[in-house]
Image 1: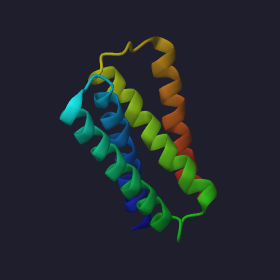
Image 2 (image 1 turned 135 degrees about the horizontal axis):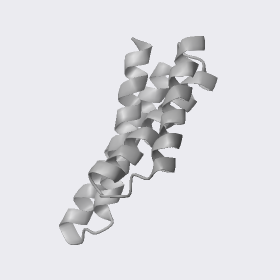
Image 3 (image 1 turned 90 degrees about the vertical axis):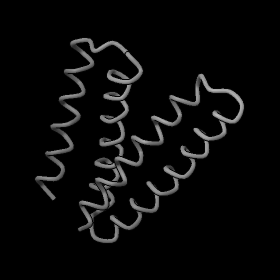
Image 4 (image 1 turned 45 degrees about the horizontal axis):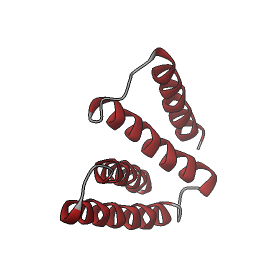
Length: 107
């Protein structure tokens, strides 16, 4: 169950990165809505991470949490914000995913 909580926490981290990206071009009420979403997802992500670390070692949970957020943010950047998907970005994204899987495998 802790791994599911940790994955949800990582997805919340991806969500708050998305909100931050959307707020970049927003103004007025729309900006406040994206920033509010950012804040809520940030707090939820941290709370879920704290819950997951009750049974998963912090040395594993934190890198997995940030890795899920980083992978999600890169994928959002490519597919939603139309950032370039260069060979090196995809290569290093792949190594990051393999590292996350490796941490799970040895824990």
